[in-house]
Every structure is written in structure tokens, then in C-alpha cells.
Amino acid sequence: MEKLTAREKAEMTYNMLQKRRVKKAKEKENMVYEVVGELVKKCNKRGRIRCRW
Image (cartoon, rainbow, N blue to C red; front, side, top):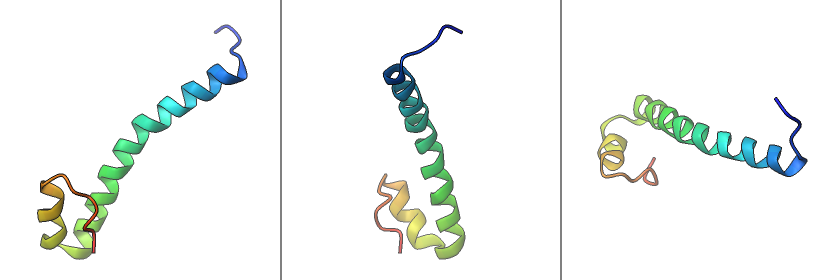
């Protein structure tokens, strides 16, 4: 792999984190389900992660 400038490296890591953050958010939602149960599930089905507890 050719050498990257610091800026390119930063952009790559940023993009990776963006993708990973989506997965992390999903995992967090699942954890919240376990703690709180149905109420949060209903909120998240509508695409709102805000009403966690």
C-alpha cells in the first residue's frame, strides 16, 4: 500500500468510524431493549432512537 498523507489517513479513519457507528447504534438499541423492554422498542420501530428511557 502506498504512503498516505495525514489528511487522507484521517479521512479514511473517519469514514470507517462513520460505518462502524451505525452498527454501534444498533447494538446500543438492543442493549436498551433488554433493560427497558417494550416501550423503547416501540419508539425505535418508528426510527427514533431518542426516547430511550
